[in-house]
Image (cartoon, rainbow, N blue to C red; front, side, top):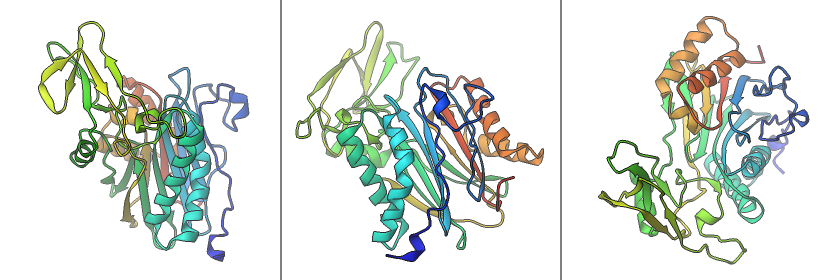
Amino acid sequence: MNKRLLFFLCNITLFSGACDRSQNTLSQESNSNIFIDQKPPLAIGCFSDANKALQCDALSMQSFRDGDFFCLCDGHCGADVSNYVARHLPSEFAAGLLCYNDKKSAFEYAFARVENYALECLSGGACVGAVYVERKSKIAHIAWTGHVRCIVQQSGKTSYATPDHVPHEKKEMARIAETGGVIFREKTQDGSRCGDWRINSLNASRAIGNRWAKGKGEGKSEVSGARRVEMPGKLMYELLSQPCNEFQSVEVQPLDGQIIAVPEYEQRQLTLTSRFLLLVTNSFCKVVSNDQAMQFVQEQANKTATLQGIAQLLVAAAVGQRGEGNISALLVDLLSDYDQ
């Protein structure tokens, strides 16, 4: 065994959707406040506004000998998948490093492992963003599915942000079309209000879990049946392939390959001006832009605000902009050595 990989030294800290918060090792300051009480070598701050009856988001942080691993999961249809991924993705990534020489393959291995378990044993699904920061080389290895956004700051501005995996994005749309997927969204008859573009009722084209939406049915060998999705009242459906027409209902037939769990991978060379890494969930991104978020982070850091305080203010700003669903943020100071 490669001794360089015998490095799991720290604890995974998780925030999840457990209704019994007494089981979480979290600050007791507020029932809706989610704090980290154990930190990896890089200073972090995180916060989640549980403005749903069920908290579906989860995160984990793991210190390795040669770097630090961060993961944020944006759960949907329950917290089972996000909780599982947050707990197990770091160890699966480490196992991937034992099998492969490159971080991209290690991430693909790890995502495939948690995907297989989620499809076999769990309900619901999750979009996932994960970052492994190597200390010596100062390289950030980023892997993601769906619309968890990973943003890197340089010189006070956004230097890189992961693009979302959504059904109407050009590359994703082409892949879905090849598998016979139907992309649709809801709209009013006068066109004044439009919902998210969706494939098999999901607004993400890559995610972990979501058995029915991936054509897996209920049993191990069963194929998902076709489902007619109906829109009540004055709301209608618009198909991406037929943008000028409106439909009262849409029939969808989930098939393998329409929604996938294969992560996209990117690596970024960090410099002495690359101070912050920010991971945020989809509900945050809908109301706060990348540049707005990083400008806000820099302004608060200049005021010597703590990372925990900045993360809390970021989430509060998104909630103030009528952000819906669970809104979570994980902020990392890439220039720190140990917690502040």
